[in-house]
Length: 570
Image (cartoon, rainbow, N blue to C red):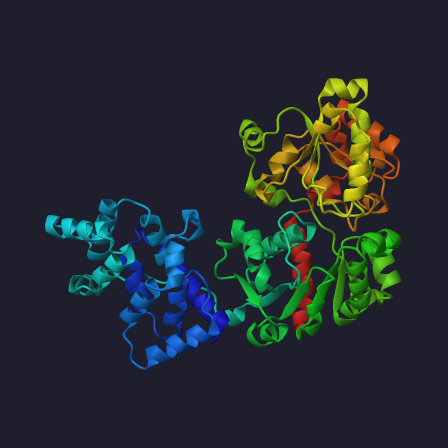
């Protein structure tokens, strides 16, 4: 089966249904039954199971169709299958299954009363109001235990339905570009362990890059690929805008890389993390994004905290860099130290593409009303925030010590200030160090002012916006730290550690509240300075990083697009 063309056909079918003035069971079934061959079988899976067809089931049903099995038989078989029943009987939010799918409409009406359910069937399948004898008979059978799906199937099997459906107008298909017009870009997320990407830097990077490419390069089709056990997580990562590009953004799960090589017409792959060694099996050109090789900068710390990670990366990073036709870095600092230095790459094989502030993304997400946001997360009073997963080099232990020192000072006690972290230290690399810091503090009010808050990415702009300030204590980053750009995008001031990479994009470090990330007293003083001057810092900080703040993810995407295009043409 030609997966790409079948998905394009399905996208065209979905657009047709979306543009319908009204959408009933009969509209979906009328247009579904007009499809032929592989397109019909593929769309059955989308309509009734809300997924792509598996190869074995697809071939089996296609063989039956070619052997003369009536199309209506397939409708009845899919509707009464165990998989469909699990979907339409589930307690999932109705938004989980779009109104442009049969299963989506059935899921919505399957939870109403029996009387309402029977009325729906008459109106949506027979296109009329129920007659009283029929209405009472169907309600009686339902009260005796007749499954609702069986009643639905009886309507589809009726002579009246077969007569009415031919009178339903067909929907016009929207025009889509011809498939060869596209450049096919693969985003490889071949993580072998189970992952959580929504709050991770790489997760935000691939979403922002993908959205920028789709928005600015109409000739690009993107294939996001991941392992089967991470597919649900990746779907969730892209859910905010995937429905806007049903004919250009596709998500695939794979059990082996050879399957990708055989079935996806990818022109060039983007691999956003150097640790995904399965990418070594990809056959098309690879662009490798190395945000940093942090473990080489803090080798002793990482060997102690993540010995297996260091062992695996040592075994693979040189092979991954050699495999790539181009290695992209986010800063000249990492290009020089990690690319030209540690990896010994030739200069022509490297390129710096800086990241950008999430202006477009935050504009699209919008802000929750302050009262609604605080109520939703039970976050009242003033707070500082450090939004980051707890990593060995993120310096949470010193931050907590500095914050507790401030909170136990006279000014700190009077402030009632909180510190919000978007991760919990339990089962994290700094668990022992953080537990020691907390254990040395006997001030329960200060300890209770630390808030561990995991929240969806859609709420992040609001978390920044309503903070008194953002503090970024990290020991190292591969580019200008995301929280600096995210916070200033919504006009919240920041205090930052003095790290080399920040100097590349900040023209005047003196405009910021800064500190030595290894000095707890300096960080304590920076917290006091940030809180005290929170109303006057933003303008000078934004002026000192104006060039970076004016750069958008559309700019980033266009630079990647030119790189991909050059490799495709070559």
